[in-house]
Amino acid sequence: MQKIPIIMDCDTGTDDAIALVAALYTPNFDLRAVTTVTGNVPLKYTSRNTLNLVRYLGFEIPVAVGAAQPIMGGRFRSATGTHGHTGMGTVTLPDTDAPFYEKNAVETIIEAARALAGELILVPTGPITNIAQAILAYPELQGLVKEIVFMGGAMIGGNVTPNAEFNAWVDPEALSIVLNSGIPCRMIGLDVTTRAVLDQSEADYFRSLESKAGILVADLLDFMLVRHQKGGEDLLMHDGLAVAAVAHPDIVRTQSFYVDCECHGTYTRGHTYVATNEVYVKKAERPALCQVALDLDLPKLKAYFREVIGNSVV
Ligand code: RIB
Ligand code: CA
Image 1: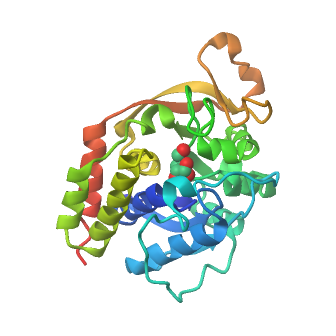
Image 2: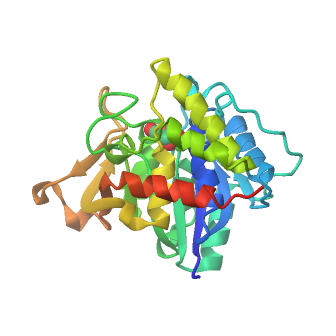
Image 3: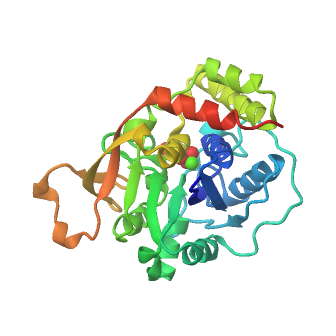
């Protein structure tokens, strides 16, 4: 089987964690490393959550620590209301004594990109700070990264403001740098992730696996269920859909648009501007267009999660 080399870049909160479990058990992935970034919760938690999860499930994939702040600095409102104080809801994983990778996120990304010479796919599921910093530090990445499939943005709507999605809102400058880098991008935004919803039956299935991964995913989904019953976010697999779209590109339907991220404006900061008309597409000024996900195959997504997490046997 020809494996797909990827690096996940996570702000491990609850849906990142489920996405990471799926990636770990996806047989056609070669998960080279996981890099961490501040977002849902501060970096110390996103990094600890990521390393604990990888080690708890018995993997030794490098976990490299990344950015503690958005690329232009500044403070932002974390998402502890959605993911809990630590980012893992009510789930507590054993604290591993394994070390983080000796390189930081940027150096880990360029190290893998050079080794894979054009085959690496980056899958950021949080604020895209690390990727933008890597592009600025190493412009050669433009010719070394095959694609960036990112969870973020929205053609229409928002979940932090009426027109800004959280990952884009935390670091719009970073997203604009990535979108204008010339590296092919695929945007898995709220337009599809707000329909990537699981339910109690999925939690029951994963718990029935009786594996550590299945029980972990079930516990995370149970936290989301209680959260939703209290008026919080539904069981939305924002990040899991981005991972699934790498494993099975036909899980989403995309269309090519000019996309940039608004970095200014009292009411517009973090808005992903998706030009749907040639009139607004200044192609000469833009090195690459972005594939924007417009629709998803939810049954296929659910089947993907069941298939790959079903691969966990201990
Ligand atoms: O807007 C949803 C995104 O923000 C997801 O990646 C979630 O984990 C949070 O980071
Ligand atoms: Ca995330």
